[in-house]
Picture 1 (cartoon, rainbow, N blue to C red):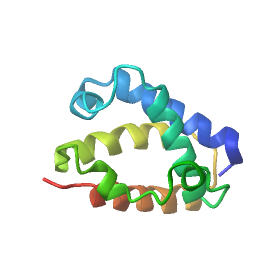
Picture 2 (picture 1 turned 180 degrees about the vertical axis):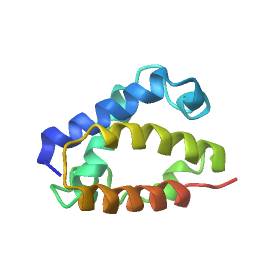
Picture 3 (picture 1 turned 135 degrees about the vertical axis):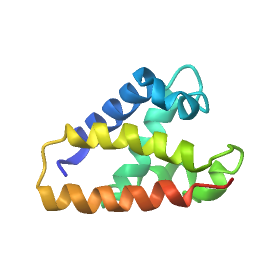
Picture 4 (picture 1 turned 60 degrees about the vertical axis):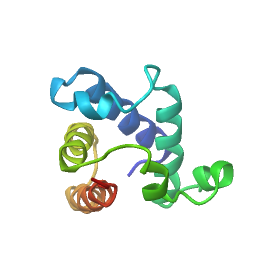
Length: 117
């Protein structure tokens, strides 16, 4: 995908869209006003999830994503809002089309796995 720099760029663009898109307001409201902590955690998670250094695990232990997201009411609308932001961010990344499609499929599965409502 392009290493650390590419992941940082994806995370920055993702949260940029979450901040500006009215269609993403519900998922944005689940986050703290300051997104620095969320950006750091997503970057560290994606680093390991994409095959790089397992930074999230080293600092926080096993991701247990679904369990970590239980405090938040995540329905299909919230998952779709998250995916909207991620799709826009991903579309700005320079990468092989096949890699982009594989990554997009995996991110869709990940987002839908978080639905708990």
